Length: 361
Ligand SMILES: [Zn+2]
Ligand SMILES: [Zn+2]
Image (cartoon, rainbow, N blue to C red):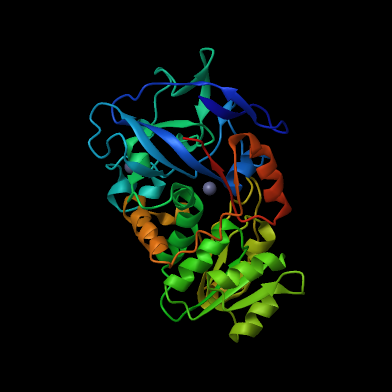
């Protein structure tokens, strides 16, 4: 099968013919239908997060089950599925206390002695996030997928696999936004827009979108933002404070930068919560004003929207089909696997919400 192989930081991904193993016990072979190009993939391409080479990136995907291994009863060939990097074992402390997105049990992967899931000329190719979606097929643990209704278009379903779940989940689960509350979202890419959409679904009273690109702020309004702030028009924190009479109850950082993480903490009102969704590069420290803790200001991280994806994702599909989750506008471009490097260039320009790779049948 064809896959985009990443071999070295600074070099473009190469489309190569690689081999994929047969499904073992509890594994599922999926024909990839669509894969979104997510900002987290770019972090690895740019070397901001370390990768083990060679590797096939991609982790936001949907497809159709082709073959199942022994003991798999949850899906059968022909089922439509969304994949999720939050593969869960189902019996560790994190899983049993409802924090399945934090499960780190290695038993959902193949061991170092086993035949690798991906290889080329007998050399193992690393699987990214237990998925590797930039490939025509994926071989994953059955706990890394969820079955969905078949009237859901798979290119938009793919977005639910990471960006949408990360954004909406951070609002519903990580922060627990209540109806009527005030929210600010800094960064209006795929995750930020999902966050805005999630805040609207949660019934937030005021939703302030912050970005430097006017076209994205325009989109943010379509996703539910009640106010917009362009970061190039002066102090962002002051503008948010002004709009809310003293700060928001919930701020979300959806870029992954020190400066915007600090701004999010500064723009919350006493008792408010800042949630950092963006991937801040390894080694970067953020600075907070210590006295703010006397005002019960809180800051927290969010991993994949603290999801329980087998429950969440089918609900998000229903939301989309009911017209409540705006996925159509989020797909900026539909591209082929061979266009993957251009998609990263587009992403860096900041003009694109999501490029989605669509595979031929
Ligand atoms: Zn992602
Ligand atoms: Zn677990």
